[in-house]
Image (tube, rainbow, N blue to C red; front, side, top):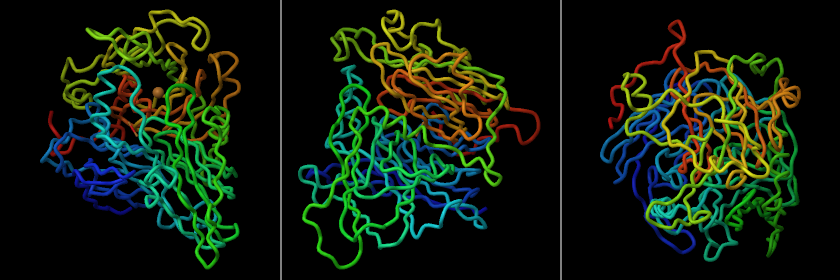
Length: 540
Ligand code: C2O
Ligand code: CU
C-alpha cells in the first residue's frame, strides 16, 4: 500500500451559476472540490490549510479509520474546528473500502460547497468483479443556493421552520439547461460508441433523496458505499444523501445527445421540484438533435421506486468476497427517529403550531458540546457528555399511526453516548415515527460499515420481522434510508475502538438534533486499542 499526499486549501472563491455570482467556501478554489484517487489499503495524508475566515472540519465519508478516530472530522464529536489561519494534517486510513466514497465539510452547513469524490481502486494486483470499464466518471449531485449558505442556515435555525429550498440541483457542479439562465452551465459526458463507463455517483445534496436516470439507456449497478454489490440492471437510480452508487453504463445507443436528469424523492413536506440535467454526448459526426430525449424519472412521491431500488442492493457474498454478518447478537438497540416541535421563546416560530422544529433519536435531541467528545473521552474530561444514551425509546407507542403522545413532541436535550464493548455484535433497528410528521431518514454511521438485514413499513415487530432477515447476502453500507413510517434493521461488529457519530444525513435533521454518538471501548491486545492523537490536533 502507498502513502499519498494531498493539500486542501480551504478558501473563499467566486463562482457563478444561474447568472448569480457569489463568494463561497471551497477547497483549492474548485466546486465541486478535488477528487482523491487511491488504491485499496493506501494511507492518504491530506494537509488541510484553513485560509478562510470561518471554522471548519473535513470528514472522509465512509472511511472507517481503524483505531484512528482523530482524523474522522465531525466537529465537536471527534475534533475541535480547524480555526482560520491554522492547519491540520489528516490521516485518511483506508482499509477494506473499495469503490466510491467522498469527503465533505462536517461543521455547520459548509458541506453545501465543500465536498468532493474519493475514488478507491482495487489493490494493485486485483481486478474488478465485473468487466473492466473503459473509463471512470464521477457524478456528484449537489445543490446551488444563490444566497450565502451560512445565511440560509442561520435563517432556518432562527425561524424554527423548514429551511429555504435550494435554487437548483447540480450535476458535477452544473445546474443544466432547464433552469433559467443556465444553458452554458451543463455537465457534458462525452462517450464513444461501444465503450463501457463506470459511473461513480455520490449524493452530496443537503436535504433530499434523489432519483437519477439517463434517457434511452439502462445501467448495471455494481457497488454502493465503498463495497461491491451483486450486479443488477435498472433504468433509474435512487440515492440518499451520503450514499454512493457505482454503475456501468454502456454507450450502446445510436450516436446522439441524450439527457441525464435528477430530481428529488420526497415523502413529505416542502421540497424543490426542479430537475437538474446533463448531456450524454456520443463522439462522432451526426446531426445533433434539437431537443434530445429527456428520461422520465419516478414521481416525486414514489416511495416504492425509492425503497425497491435500495432493496435490490445485495452483497456479492461469494468465495472471493465473503460476508461476515454477525449471526448472533450481543447488543440489541432500538432507536426511534422523530421530528418534534417545541415552543419558541419570545416569538412565534414558523414550524407547526407556531413552534420550532426539533428532531430526536429515542426522544433525545442531540446537542453538540463545546469540547469534542473524543478528546473528553481520551483525556477523561468530565462534564462534556453523559454515558446514558438509551438502548430503547422511553416507552413504546404506536410509532407510525394515529395519535402520538404529546410528550413525544417535546424531546429532551442531551449530549449522550452509548457505550459498546469491543467486538460487541450489534443489531440496531431504526424505527421511523409519525410524531409531528412521518418522513424518511438516511442514517449514516461513522467508523463502521453495517449490513442491512431487514426493512419494512409500519411498526417493527420483534417476533415476526426477524425471521425474514436476509443473513445470506445483505448489502454492506454506511448510509441507509429508513423508509417513511417504516423501519430498517442493521447489524455490525463494534470492532473499531473510538468515538463515532451516528446521524441522519439530511442536513436540516442533523441540525435539529437527529444524531447520537457511540463510544467503542478498547479491547485487549495491541491491535484492539485506539492509537494516540497526533500532535497537531486542533484545540478548542
Ligand atoms: Cu457524510 Cu457524518 O457524514
Ligand atoms: Cu432525518
